[in-house]
Amino acid sequence: MKASKQQQQQKQNQLQQRGCKALCCSCRFSVSSSEEAESSASDRFPSVSSLAHAMVQERLDQMIRERMEASHVERRRQQSSEGTKFVVMVAMEKSSYDPRVDFRESMMEMIAANRLQDAKDLRSLLNYYISMNSNQYRSLILEVFHEVCTNLFLSCKCH
Image (tube, rainbow, N blue to C red):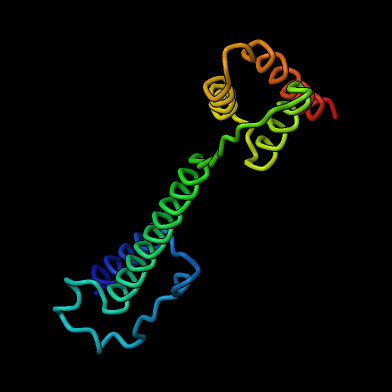
């Protein structure tokens, strides 16, 4: 009988070393107090309580893993959707007495409305202005774009 008690104690110790998560039984085993209730077959196999405990623990571990994987997938989905911006720009023909002011206002409006901050997005906006206007305005567009970006982004970083 001492050998069977030692085996049972070893199995309980193994389960405890494995680490109970406080969600199941906090390592409280229900072991029968009467030695007569144990048969010779149960000496060779783990107790029902130990098996039930192990099954519950394994299922809890699986549920935690699944939840962590699902939250990881959701986080990645949100990050990828945040990285994708769709900017709709409509070109209008306009005659202006002060194209510098008009370009500045237009650029500031586009940057603010579309919350552009990445260099890639700003570069796309600049390319759009250059491609949609005649070559005679190219240097003016570059100057105004530089001024707008300097005022918007350098002034924000100083505070």
